[in-house]
Amino acid sequence: MSDRSPLILWFRRDLRLGDHPALAEACKADRPVIPVFILDEVEGARRAAPLWRLGLSVEAHGRALADRGSRLILRRGEALPTLRALAREIGAGAVWWTRHYEPQSIARDEAVKAGLRDDGVEAKSFPGHVLFEPWTVETKTGGPYKVYTPFWRAVRGRDPGSPYPAPGTIPAPSDWPKSDDLADWRLAAPMNRGAGIVAPHLVVGESAASHRLGDFAAHRIADYADARNDLADQGTSGLSENLTYGEISIRTVWHSGQRAREEGKAGAETFLKELVWRDFAYHLCFHTPRLTSANWREEWDAFPWKDDEGASEIHAWKRGRTGIEVVDAAMRELFVTGRMHNRARMIVASFLTKHLMTHWKVGLNWFEECLVDWDPANNALGWQWSAGSGPDATPFFRVFNPDTQAEKFDLKGEYRKRWLAELSEDPPDTALAYFDAIPRAWKMAPDDAYPEPVVGLDEGRRRALDAYEGRSF
Image (cartoon, rainbow, N blue to C red; front, side, top):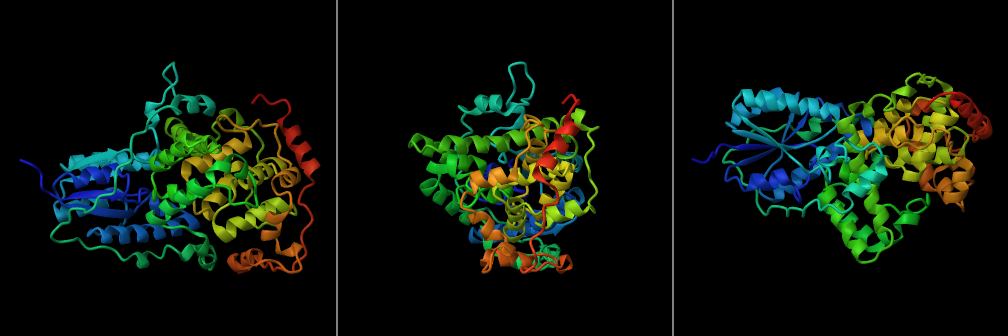
């Protein structure tokens, strides 16, 4: 006899209908499907910007499900007791979900799987968050990769499979369980007045993500290899925001990049490498969970990082008041848009960890507070790569000169003018928006005098190199 009991489909960071393996299989199971999102101990622990952006994605996904005759049931609480209670309430015989690979999610999911099975409820996880499951990519000796280039070579020719189509209908129950009201969660509250400033810069939901990919593939991917580094240009795909919440699948994006490469678009290969870098971050996060919380290279544990969050230099860095124009422009872009150009991320990370000799975790935590595309694995890998403490990192002795970077990647100064009001008699709206977004307690105004550098670039570089000298990294 077939099991006709309801199936709970537990959505997390996979808020889409297309290319969703768990959803596709659920719709073929000949049983009612109850889509659920839980603001639990992992998803609810997000900081201000990613928590707010998550709520927008949940809202958009709820509308998409409603268009298919379904609903998204919202609950708040620890995952296991919440799922247990819901399963009892509706008589569910199964809970399915998409796998994630960072340590907090793994711990949660293992507890859920064990607890539900003890209750006699089927608990099953599916792929869908990465191109290749972390345990399926191994070196010739059988271990995980620790260097990106061999990892890329190992997966470059692999077929991740074809994307699943979105279901036309989703089997619904005769009676729906009660749902929380998303507005009652007040996910925008930690953003204070910044939410209204950042909101126009967002591209939310599966449909919008699909249009964003189509526009990039049609108009910008050919020039991606060079344009992605131009600070003033919109040369990147912007899809990190949508991949973070699973509004589009990495497999769908990969196939679009592959088609562009087959069409001879020169930048497609570089774009595909960036997608694989995302997989590499999760590969490392799964095999070495300390990536997200401690120096990946343990020999860095004794390095004399500064980590005083109250230090004036750190305040200046966070507030875009270091006196280094390209650094300050990037930090203000972050506050106004919730994003930061990828080249700028490398510049500000190098400046913080090397010129200011500050622990990479200070930067990692600030990005986690401010980025709408915050991703636990990629944020951690990016910071450790910049600091030199991570796998396949930039050499520790490589200290970016922000002024040289600006001359190379913001030749006409357009990026700096866009974000630094103090340098212009008639600043653009983008630069002025920063002062509407920041906390009033910062007491900053557009007509403030621009600050002197918190550290001379040559002085900061020498200080970093002196600290590295004699250490065996």
